[in-house]
Amino acid sequence: MNLRTTILTFSLIFGLTGYSSFTRGIYGMKNPKKTNKETIARSSKKYKIPQADNYELDTSYLSFLFSPDTTRYREQIKNHYQPLQVLYYDKNGQLESFQINYYAGGFPNLHWDRDSILTTFPPRVQAPPDSVIPLDHKNHNS
Image (tube, rainbow, N blue to C red; front, side, top):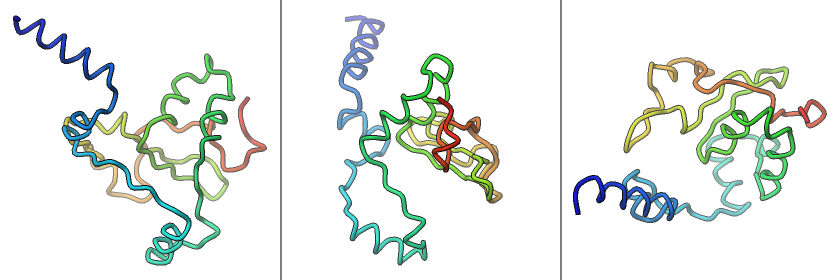
């Protein structure tokens, strides 16, 4: 096999298997630990996060995410579909800053503080803020 065929074969294998344990290993990712309400409550207490400010996503997130016009909001939906993300909302409930793995860059380790965006709070904008995931459902773009 020549080098081109080898690279194509490996790309096809990894593309079809998604995040296999080998691919996760390259990125330094481990299998996610399952959590429960007690663990969340303990962590909240440890980091002084009020119970009222705890949110948990369930499988309905996907149907909610794909409820806007998927043609019009394709890029925004792709951004909110990323596995690692942090959203910072202002006091009016508007998305002010958005960090996601897609824009972090770096291989195999992500560079979250690229261009020193994390030196302020809230962090400087990394991913384009949008209104697809509002804090108030009444403002949802459908």
